[in-house]
Image (cartoon, rainbow, N blue to C red):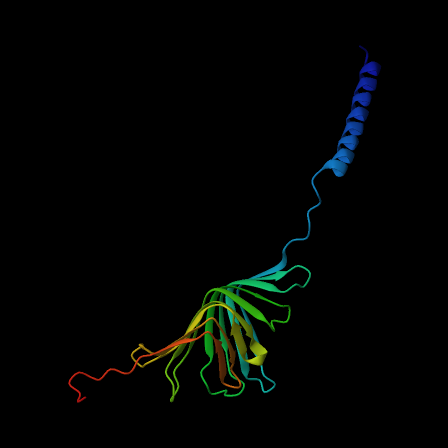
Length: 203
């Protein structure tokens, strides 16, 4: 076979190869897998913190966590290992509530936050009241309103200076209006533990 025939054969094979590749690509586009949709998140932050201040420049709330994802399409946020400090606008000198949760979601403006998984809250003692604690499986916060609510079973208790419960209140749902200092509960069971007399004290 002379060189001219070899050249024509190579050119023909090359053309058939290109044609086959085009046909395969066209078939793949028509019968291949469905196109991949948008990613679930477009930004990810680790070891993050977010703060909101009052008009007077005082801290209103602080939220920190291990990971924060901003959802695609401005659909809000998801987070893991969350901690929140909520200060009272009504009583700025009162201790803040410290709240922890395994996971959380929030809207785009962080105006409504949903916490899930072993939610725990504590507030340091004051001159007139001991340390307050609560536990629940899910909690919704409205930080700018100083408001919180839960529709799952929750337990709220006040501790003595020795860390023992002075009283304990279990409810199937509750709403806390922190500015108004009001707590509304449903299906409540309360327990009161009277203080024990010191050893050797007179009855």
